Each structure stands twice: as structure tokens, then as C-alpha cells.
Image (cartoon, rainbow, N blue to C red):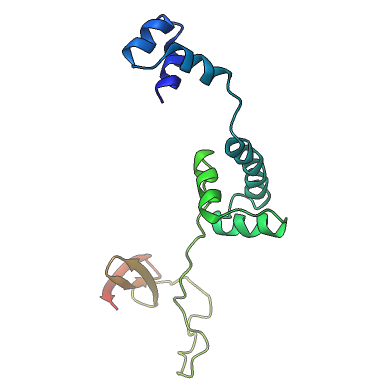
Length: 165
């Protein structure tokens, strides 16, 4: 970390002064600059290319576990934690799945009310036809159900009720 700081700041301060302040030798800094990347870093670069390809091929939906499965299917031996680190280092984030809730059970054995209105959603006078709608709302405490009664003539809510499940 000290050598990186020296490398960044060497355009503004003498290398000798930076090395002295950070308590490192100049020869150590110059050796670090000339040193080739380690085997581990070279392997990370090779693996990250495969991780990026897998991530893009799956429309950025795969997390580290599924990317790992892709890599192992290609014959690449790597751990899940390494794949997670490579994704994190390159800011590759998966898009979470959209949650879906089942709010209606249409296949029940209970009697169904007849459709009196017959999809004719208009009325000639107030209080001739009322319609209702029930909506399920997910809340922190669980499901909450909202029922609204609407007058078809004025299109205004006549009444409503909310009930927590």
C-alpha cells in the first residue's frame, strides 16, 4: 500500500522524500515497480475475463454461485469465494429477481357470485349500480386487504374497508 501511494504521488514529490516519510527503501520501491505481476494476479486476470463473459451472457442475472457453475461446466476449477471477490472487484452486480405474490385462488370450490353488471360499467343515475374491487397489499406486518365500493354513476368511492391478514 505504501508503494502504491509513492507511485501516485511521485509526480508531486521526490521519490526519496516519499520513501523516507513512509519508511521504505528506495531500492524496495524500484524493485516493486519493476516486478512482474504474481502468478495469483495473472490467474485472477484470466478468471475475471471468464467471469465477465458469463455475467454478460446471462444478462447480468447470475450471482457468484451460478457463475461458478458456469465456470465449472467449462472445466475451470475455482472457489465460489474467489468468483464472488472477482465480481465484487469489477463491480459486477446481479439484478435481483422480481418478487411475485399469489393473491388470488381462482380454483376454489366456493360459490361464485353472478355477474349482474355484465361488463357494462356505466349507470344512468346515482346508486343504481355499485361495483367493488379487492386489492392485496404487502406490508411489513404481512398482507393487508383493501376493499373499495364505487358508484358507477359518479365514479366515486362509496365506502372502503381495510383488513390485515
